[in-house]
Structure formats: C-alpha cells, structure tokens
Image 1 (spheres, rainbow, N blue to C red):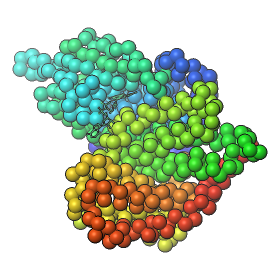
Image 2: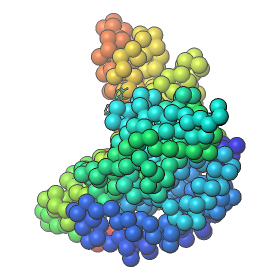
Image 3: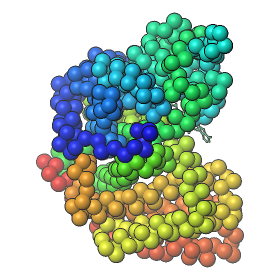
Image 4: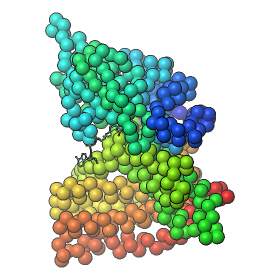
Length: 559
Ligand SMILES: Cc1cc2nc3c(=O)[nH]c(=O)nc-3n(C[C@H](O)[C@H](O)[C@H](O)COP(=O)(O)OP(=O)(O)OC[C@H]3O[C@@H](n4cnc5c(N)ncnc54)[C@H](O)[C@@H]3O)c2cc1C
C-alpha cells in the first residue's frame, strides 16, 4: 500500500517542536540575514549548507518512512517544516524540497527493494536528489514529453534502457547525487533513477533567475544514458504519469506551505517595521489606511490558505487518498496570498522596501516561483474547476448546497466564525455552477478557470471558519501553526468570508453575464438566485472586524 493511502500518525507534537527548533538554530548559525542577501546577490548555491542540513540536521529523514531509516513524518509535519524553511529562505528550502520531490516517485511507486536501496541511501548518507519531469517542450502538459527510454535486450530479455533527450528547469540539477527522470518507454511514461556521472548524462549551467537565486536550477541532457532494468521505478513501464499524479496532493501542499511561510515572513517584517516608522505624528501601525490595506487582508488570506493546508494534510494523514484537488486549492490559495502579501510588504516599507537590505524585496522575488512550479496557478484553476464541476454534475447541483448546509449548522453552533457568510457564498456558488451548466458556459475556458478561482476562495472561507471554530473550542491540533489568537482568527475568518462572498457575487455575475449566460430579462431573477442582496448585506461590520484583526496581528509586537 502506498504512503499516501496508508494513514500516517507522523511525529508527536514534542518531536515536531524539537525539529522546528533545531532548524531555527541551524538557520541562526548558518543562514543569517547578510549571508542570505549575499547568496542572492552572487547567485550562489550554498551546497555545503544544504548538504549539512541533510547530513547533520537530517531534514531528509522527515519524509522517509521509519522502515527505511527515516522519521516517517506526516504530511502535517512536512507542512510545518516547509513553512518554516520558506520563512527562512525559499532558495535553500527549494534545494531541500528537490530531494523530497525527487524521492517521491520511489516512495509512492517503488518496490520494497527499491525503497530500501534508495530511500535507505538518502537517509543514511544525506544524498541530494533532483526531480526531472519538465522538458523544453513539456511543462504543464507533461504528456508531451519527448525524452525516450529505448529497451536494451539480451537474449530476448530487457536488461536496461538507453535514455535520450533533455530536461529543463531542474532544481538541484547541477548538484544532485540521484535523479528521478521521467522518460517515454514503449509502455508509456516511466520513472527511472539515475546516478550523477552516468556516461552520457550532463547538465547545463545554472539558470540566472528572477528569485530563489541561491537555489540551483539547470537543464539536464541524456545521450544514450544506460539505466539497468532494475532502476525502473516500480519495475513496470508506463506508470510514470500515474505515479506523478499520486504525489501531487502531497507535494502541492509543500509548495502551499512555501507560499504561506514566505508570505508571512514578508508580512512579519512589515508589521514590525510599521511599529517603529513614525509618519504624521504616529507609528504606521496605528494608521488604519495603512494596516487595513497592506497588512490585514493579507493576514486573513494567508490564514485561509493555512486552514486549507491543515485540513488537507490531516485528511491525507488519515488515509483519505491523494487529494490532488485539495492540494491544488491549498497551493492556489496560499501561493497567491503569499505573493500578494510579499508585494504589500514592499509597499508597507515605502522606499526602504525597494532596496535589497530590507529583505522584503528578495522575498517578493523568491515567492514568485510558488505560483509557477509544481503546477502553475492557471493549471490549479483548471484542476479545481474540472473536479468540482464533476461533483456538481454527479450530485445534480447539490454539492455546494450540501456543503453550505454543513456550514449553516456550524454557524448555529458557533455564530462568530463567519460560517454563515461562507455558507451564503457556497449557495451562490452552487447557483452559479448550475447557471454555467444550463447555459454551457464552461465551453469558454476562461469562465471555467474563473470558476476555479471562486471555488478555491469559497472553500477557503469554509476551511477558515472551521479552523476558527476549532481554535475557539480549544480543539486545534497541538501541531497547528499560526500566530493569531482564537478571537483574532474568528475575526479573520469573518473578514475572509465576506471577501469570498463579495467576490462570488460580483465575479459570478460578471462572468455569467459576460459569457452571455444571463439574458437581460433573467438578470434580476439570477441575482436573487445567487442571493446577491444577502452577500451584500453580509458586508456590514467589515471595518470593525478588520480593526479586530489588526489588534490581533499587532498583539505583542507593538514597540
Ligand atoms: C526555478 C524553477 C525550478 C523548477 N524546478 C523543477 C524541478 O525540480 N523539476 C521539474 O520537473 N520541473 C521544475 N520546474 C518546472 C516547472 O514545474 C514548470 O516551469 C511549470 O510546470 C510550468 O511549465 P512551463 O514552464 O513549461 O510553462 P507552460 O506550461 O508553457 O506555461 C506557460 C503559461 O501558460 C499557462 N498554461 C499552460 N497550459 C495551459 C492550458 N492548458 N490552458 C491555459 N493556460 C495554460 C501556464 O499557466 C503559464 O502561465 C521548475 C521551474 C522553475 C522556474
């Protein structure tokens, strides 16, 4: 049974806490502010530091099951580690993440013998790995890959494969010891594990990137590189895309955690800065026009991303399956929120934000990658919309009405967490999807993608309401992250639910009418079906709730 569906308890809260502390301590000693800026400036991969994170600190042990010498961390643990690593430095985090990612095809698709061999070696020797899927002509559409694996036979039996082709944008591409490489065998796309230095296997010079400049990204080339038959992951051809799909729920959660960690890291800097920067007679932190634009909305959106990550990680760990769509929603919400937060953090620093010394400028460039790698935001929109569209059709339009009713029940029991507003947004979403079905609006790809965005926002609002309720009731996991107190989280949830409600009302109308799906005579009735008046009225109290969130964000930070 694969790691994904087994159910995973992971580390206990104390061990997770100690692991996070050890990473913080390592960063204090090895990845100080000035060094990080210098690595960024010189575009240098800190190979020794990344390797000692593996050999001394043992970060790679987290994702390797105990049976192969690792610690068997859960998806939840890995999210907390990824969030922390990204808050320190996203380039270094990417170097470590590439090993996580590179070993995933083995973890999810390898035979017992292969897991013992390769995962055991990663655990024991702290090897670096790379994940070679993307090609010059095959990015979002991996099915278009052109790297080939041609069988080499002896006496009629396949003894190995000759690999030919190229990979592009491979993290750790110039430094890894082991590479998972996706190539087209006669039976279909297949993962192979190759070792550094194999004859015919080369890599390009490091890409000169916009951000995560201290990570190494390189092209790979293969000229008749021989891979023994024993190095086919799972020993069966044609499983590559299935195996890649199996890991997406899990790996997208990691990148979601990157967006969350980097976004909060930038926002924290802005929050601290605003308590000391005096303009017009007082600190910026006390100016509502500043906090309610540059800080509060971002804290709310990031926490919605966190709520979605935590729910999805918990469900993966309970063995509910690969949860690819949920991973996509978590990634979309958290990485878009992380980008927006980092951008606002530059604005929040004024001119100081625009220079390198204050770090937010670097975080802004670094976090940009999170909406691109492991599937772009547009591919996330498509994945989300297609899956939930099926749910809408299969339930004859009930899917989001049912979800809304569950939130209404939560609202009855816990009236301060924004669940009622999230429920109204969900009913509206159900009506919007129904209109899209009747008028065949998803034949417009853009409308389908916009639905993906609305679905993510509304589901995020539901997740944050549930999380705020758990925080108020004292039932949040001991391993949960985040720094807002329960009341602050409830206020953040109310703000976030209002935003989802306003967006679904305005954007829903916009695209349904924009795609000629609502004739003039039906517009009022359609607005009533969406509940536009209720979604509008739900905005009452918004500014006061933003005041609450600001108070919670600044609690304990005030200079
Ligand atoms: C720094 C960095 C590190 C990376 N690390 C790795 C790694 O370690 N291993 C690895 O295998 N890959 C890695 N990648 C590759 C990354 O996953 C791809 O760049 C990404 O999946 C997008 O593919 P692409 O670049 O070919 O863009 P394309 O797929 O060509 O997309 C270009 C644009 O078109 C949009 N688009 C694509 N398809 C559609 C569609 N059907 N409908 C509408 N719009 C669409 C996209 O959203 C995007 O906006 C890395 C990339 C970078 C930049």
